[in-house]
Amino acid sequence: MLPIIEFKNFTFQYRAQKKPTLVDINLRIYKGEKILIAGPSGSGKSTLGSCLNGLIPFNNPGKITGELIISGKTPESVFDLSKIIGTVLQDTDGQFVGLSSGEDIAFLLENLARPQDEMKERVQAAAKLVGADGYLSHSPQRLSGGQKQRVSMAGVLIDDAPILLFDEPLAALDPLTGKLATALIDDIAKRTGATIIIIEHRLEDVLWKHIDRVILFDSGRIAADTTPDEITVSEKLTKAGIRRPLYINALERAGVVKLPADKPGRLETLYLADNDKEKVRAFAENMNDELKPAGTLSDSPLLDIKDVGFIYPETELKALENINFSLYSGEMTAIVGANGAGKSTLAKLIVGFEETGSGAIFYRGEDMHDLTIPERAERIGYVMQNPNQMICKPLIFDEIALGLRVRGVPEPEIKDRVEAVLKICGLERFIKWPVSALSYGQKKRVTIADALVLEPQILILDEPTAGQDYRHYTEIMEFLAGLNRRGVTVLLITHDMHLCLEYAKRALVFSEGRLLADCPTYEILSDPGLAAKASLRETSLYELAHICGVSDARKLVSAYLDAPSCLACKEGKNNSKLH
Image (cartoon, rainbow, N blue to C red):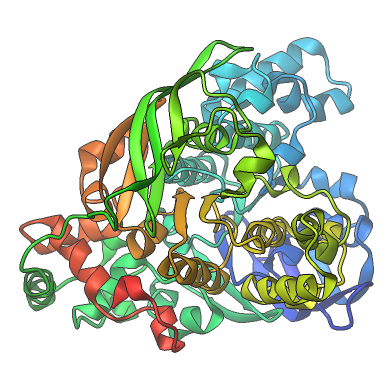
């Protein structure tokens, strides 16, 4: 059987770089396979995707040696490849061209001058396949993250491409929507028989559904080409800086060692002997004399949100209603919930990007209503979800230095502070680079550096680790944890339930503009009812607790957090949340 994709001794080097990004790649992918490509940032996995869809070399030229053969021939143009490979980009906003979702899905057919009746019929069919037929008349910019993903998927299904490439399809999605997206991709694979290639950091979320092979990239080379059962218990994941599934780590901490023969690639296929289950039960019970409340760190709130409500004037959409909570100095708190739940809107109200419709926001007892955005910025730093909405300078150094320069900080101090945050954010080698040369995930790190360099008292981060591999995720979060230990209050808006578990003792749960819960994080992620209401997904620790007969799933989650075993610990870092 001939492969539908084949790389033969393939090496690629960008014109602007001294070393190749892809080195001696030999890879065969066969028709109908479902492949996960994983690896840390800069490992070459996204570059491989660009080679597949023709962006390399036709849009981004460079030096190529070896061969790439797709459907039996060497690619000749992006247009020719677009008929064979449909691509869903990580940044869906960068993929939309139509004024409505329906127009966007029909874009390819319009370019092919297909008849109107045929276009309408095929657009409706493709939209229905992914569940996007209910908002064909809506503007793509008005859709939630999950809805945008569905429209993008419909757009690539419209021409029956035999190969579908998904570049980090879960990066901007809440946990439940990410789960649904994974199921949707799996359903598309079954219905169409297409070859599926998924490039993604969130290994466990993708492996929730069947995957044939996992291709692990590291330093531009293929580090592993194996099954999910092999890779999930392999040290190669840790060495490459990729997070192993949560349930695998929990079993390890409980003293349970699993082998590939035990089918550990998915929790539902994992074999656990009675002795294994007993070890998990003992681990959960012995580590917990009693469940600990989140608590607060001081008596006087640093930030008070009182009866806050907000309606978007242009749509009369009620984004927030009667929100009440307080943040205390030195806390690290997570705000979680579905896409469109009001989390980002609340952040914009706090920093002054939007004006509060009702209620009030107090900083150290002072009503912030009359404070300007620059005045609020002296107290509260904010990192937006979309990095393209924050970056305004062409060069990375100038972008990060901007906030210091407008405040009159001396240039020698600016240089030291910019270099320090670049190192923390894993961007030190890019100090002289243009921002345009960075990936979406790297741009995200630039905007985090923008906020960190100003050393604010409160730091609000909207999805700070989206698109980051585990090593960079850990570096960023350890830096934030260090700031937190020195008294900086950190508010994390996130879909990453691992982040919540490891770093935030307290979580605020939002749904449809309302605050559903304010309680310890482990309680939220052990409560299926609350998780469902907020479009969250209970972690695999909850499922593992149920399988092993743990009396209270919260005990296993709490025990996991107390057990001193994590990537940061193995690298000699101090993570106060886990010790």
